[in-house]
Image (cartoon, rainbow, N blue to C red; front, side, top):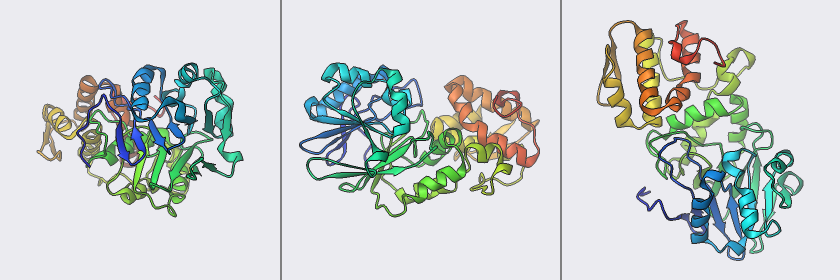
Length: 355
């Protein structure tokens, strides 16, 4: 898919479904609202935070008339996807649309001041029927990453609105996922998903569905190798499984490194940062680290000196250039690998889990 588009305009990603997000170069935490136009009615998926309300509203109105919006769908209660709902209520009236969400999520929405009626997916056979005959099906994915989280499947276009699942954090953002998207996705899921069994359970529920595209609330639209992305998450070590592997029987997918000491930990960081900050900038940054040899493909060829110190300098440089997200995206994997190898990590990672 071509990734050249006018960021001031909505983008139709398939017939009747448009991306209506706002691009913000200052953060890797990109939020993606979508609008589904079904003719008589429209569904607005996760309209976003108060920060981007004006921009999102402008793009929504480029795609559908405001009076057609009958539902605002919220997969969970985080402010980055639903804090702007009271603004929509003020603009259109709280009686114009219903909030589509899970009962566990609904009890928290009142704290944003949301007044609209709620359509509880778990009390309506996990489906929503639109006037035109279109049926949206809901896939319950608890603790990925909230107790009431669900995904939405549109059979008509074979589109999966996945919420936070399949999301990613990256400064190298594109509307459509690229070659290093799985690494950006790995870092996000390691931190935000409860555990490997929870994530695997969510992925197994997707097996019966024919999915042409995945549209996550963070990260990029996935249209290439959709099944490969599902398989990737099905075995990913994340959450408590990664932090405390002894508590669960499933270890899932281990980081793709051999027991080669700090050079392999550095290789892990390089691979991750190519997804988070982009290939060119990740390699350029690493080449400036004294004692580290890196080739044009991002391979760590040699570590000459104190491996722990060189790893620390590399992480610090990424932090200085790109901010705390660049290091946060590596913490979980580095701690797991260091624990497995019996190695000490530099101070920038923190001495214990949770720091």
